[in-house]
Length: 196
Image 1 (tube, rainbow, N blue to C red):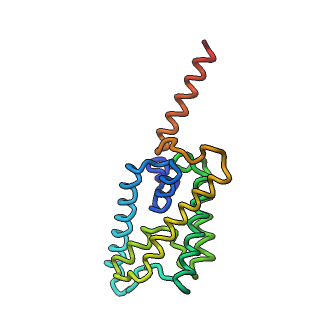
Image 2: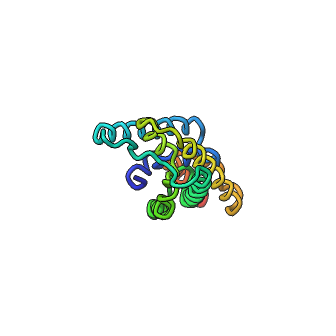
């Protein structure tokens, strides 16, 4: 999906990541709110389709912890912090940069899901957990998967600020097209000044 819609929307499929970009000052709140509404709406529609296709399935992919709630909360927090840290490293503004961004982000999600999925569900995405919980009516553990990823994304932003250059987490445009236009404009101005 990063390669498919990354140049259109920045491939924001996760409300925690969108809020993380907002916390990093790479994404204005006026754009984050419709993104989050779309992400949650998409999750609800997808879960509704699953209900139609598999009415006998009681859980519909609802994320539930295998152990204690606190164990899953802490693990989800760490997983999302790591994911957000990586995404901030391979993004410009609020969009991924370079041909390997999709591979890097996909690999982190895949590895985290492989080792943490059996323990906590490895959601890392509030919309992914909210949709099945609402449609299936299983709300007991949904708070973990709403609160931990958002908190983890903010921790990932703090981690990025600790290791990257000053100003890495500041608003630099929210759309890859805008970033490209700004870059092209700067290059054009530099060429005009050098020719003068």
